Amino acid sequence: MRNHKRLLLAATGLGALAMIAVPLWAAGTSGKLMHVTVQMTMNMQGMPTIGPRSVEHDVCMPAGKFDPAAMQHAMDRNKDVQCRVANLKWMGSNVSYDVTCSGKASMTMHADMQMAGEDSFTGKSHVTMDAGGHTMTMDNAYTAKRVGSCDYTPPPSS
Image 1: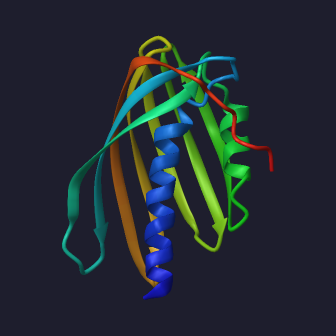
Image 2: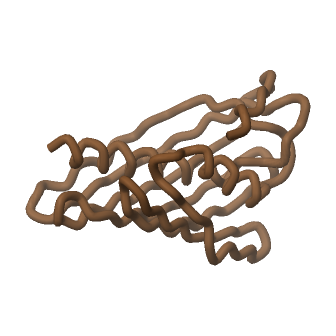
């Protein structure tokens, strides 16, 4: 049961990463306050579907454009799970990418995001992981819109 809770937390964290990964912008001196809504649905073999559940957060993000190197750097700070970004593709204002994680939690994610300038985005992600011999999936839908400014402080380096 303890590992199941760990995997569930890891999957939720990966979903949150997807939410934050797209707006990880090149560092700036001031930030933008983004209101982010995530709608999550979880499925596990032999269990009832959980959700959809909606979570809303106001997140202070650095100003600027999407930076895939910053996304990888943010994931590298987690020492329990090693994640790598792959297949990053831009088509106009759309970006898609895959994330593969190993370590204490093994999972894969595919994300598709539609950028609307620097101040909003929508998107979705699909996460698959093994939870004690059972396959668990999590589907997330994201919307984010700038609602103001904030003082952005970059996270400490690992």
